[in-house]
Length: 405
Image 1 (tube, rainbow, N blue to C red):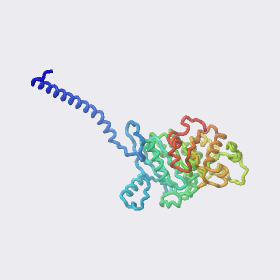
Image 2: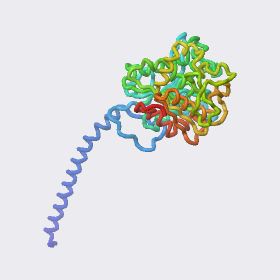
Image 3: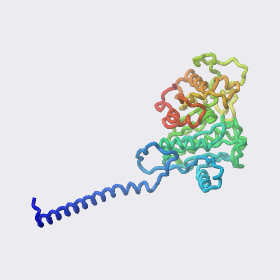
Image 4: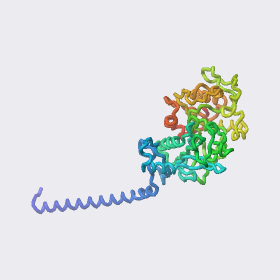
């Protein structure tokens, strides 16, 4: 190879020309990439998405078009007594207020509720989960728990979560807020104020607004879920609730988790001497009102009493219902032990099993199923976070219309 001065100069010029060429090619490629990326960035910048309530285990799948974002989040409750007047607490209270709505019920009374989107409407919401609190009437906790489950499913952008608050006088409701007795709200009884308004009337209003296509044009599914006393509410509403009958283009599912008792549709009850739990007969009992509402269809209250029993049976046996049962929910704490309840079984787990057997016996075509949650007792959060709970809430019972199992 030549190494004279002229050759060295020539090689230097060749290297310089190659550097310039590579630089020009890189500049062209960068420019083409920017042209592709910038429109995508500007598309998402128009509707930024805040972080979900719970961290996801992996990135969300791509979602075409603009994304809806939840209007509000409720922070975890702060147990630090020294932080009551802190800026963080004030911001938390402000964020929580954005989640609280008031549903007018007449006579200048209203029902308080928590909701992740306003009931005035949202064009991107496709499903709603209405979750009913338990006997402690902690709607806030029910709301935060369910919004976390929705976030874990990466569904916050299309799912409205709503938790009504059925208050009693012990909750010290505001002067304009409706209130019930401790038992009435669970079974659709009338409020003490305003008179003549059932807790099921309130749920009817919620369903009507969710199914209003001028408010929620894409919403096609409502799930009513409840645990314990909330499960009692959901199961009775599935039978006597009237709004679902008039909804068009909206499917309704019910998730009934660990209720203390069930509404039976005829006078037969489980033969508790049958170890298999599959025999049913009219019981020989001194409990003369065992078949009265809320345990049976006799002596129904104002809301439920306006219909023929055949209509109630038709509605319930065509409703899509999942019974969630905690395998360890066998304790007697807060269990209904009245004679009407004890004819349904010894504890919540047994009552759930016997009730499904009852439905199989008398109404085998009903689209109902039962899912046992292994190792879980009477715990709302664990029940809904379980594999079985997630399937019931987001997969839906019997999606192909399969009969009871």
